[in-house]
Length: 545
Image 1 (cartoon, rainbow, N blue to C red):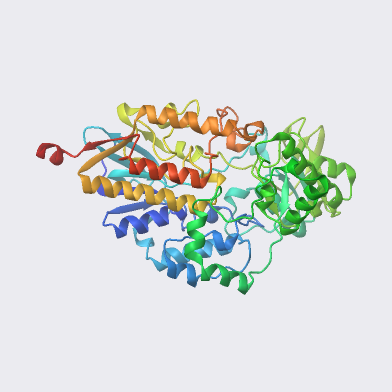
Image 2: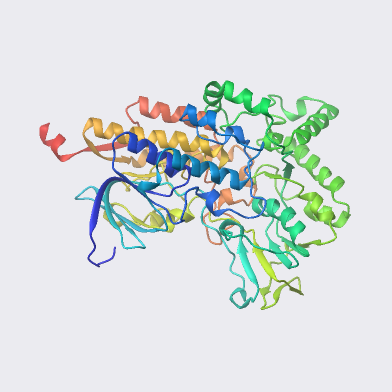
């Protein structure tokens, strides 16, 4: 902590982040009578949808399911223009929520939290910001999202490049005009797959540098059909209740048959129908695609054949067809004309799977021994997921232990919500919870409700400190890994495993056991008097005893 003298204010709760987690937290805590202060590094609300303004940015969860459920009037009044919403529409929704519930007055914008230290004697957190704020709070909540720290690879010569450089996760809010330009796009994950088709329509030429090809399913996006919207709004309450106990937090048509229980002809017909419907529901074609390699091979091969049908150049098609990992074990991508883009005369694909980009030059870059010149370079290289943003803050718990030091071998949480030795520190959709393997809005609401209900429980019972027990945390960490190891997920070098960050420990970070199963576990924890958590009474309550 800084030694500078600074005025220290006091609130019940400090929240970091004004995305969908932070907004709902603020709304609930305010309604429950807690004094709350929110710090947000951007100049507006929206979290990931505030920062990710790259061309083509779009949600891969259907619009009617990607929204808050806590207010019926809000559900009924909002209209989504498309089946899968584009970033501007989701950001508009976040702004609508902030205005509707008058949330901005308790948010400090353009302010980054730099440190948070726990004072064991006072049983309070002291939080500092880059603007000199110093705040004491009983509860400290990191609502910073799972994919909010953009990752730009360290390539030799990057600082010497004379053209424009952009990252899809931190896109200029005024937009970027690439018309007439020769541009490079590095990365073919979700953001690259969404951005490349749009950039190809704008730029004179696009060269895509691909390390690992990705499986992608067409979104088959369309304008929102009034009858479809009406079906949801007529029965929103029941549909939401059902969503909360599904595997992914969303309603999908899931086939309960294994892939090899049907004939080859029926299997192919099933995949074809799913492809025509579009979206991540493709992985629900059969019930064992993510647990049985032979079953997965059939789904993977179907997509590879689709790619080869779409992409006219056989060599390019071959490079775009993933072969080194099972479909679905990296985040499945949903696209709008991605593979078709490679049929354009102004798009080239460069394979860098064997050798990475050698260096960036003032005019462009060198790869595979060839020099390229570009007006701009777009990095679609993803994020330091799940832990990166938590580590950006100097968080220190009991005895001054740094969170980053405790998690040196990988994140350790109980339920993805709290970590032992860090009392009253809550993480919304943290590592060890369904988070990125779910409909985030469903998981966010569930976590926020758990946290706020816990804080109310503490207030009502005269409790001052809440912290996981070490054994409960150890058991949960083991359970998360054991659950992942029963699937095919560990077979991919994915950002779920931290594989995109050099030196990051390799272990599966989200909980893959399912949204519904996780919710029931949390419900059982509460029903058993917060099993796995320990509490300390406040001084006055302890004295009264």
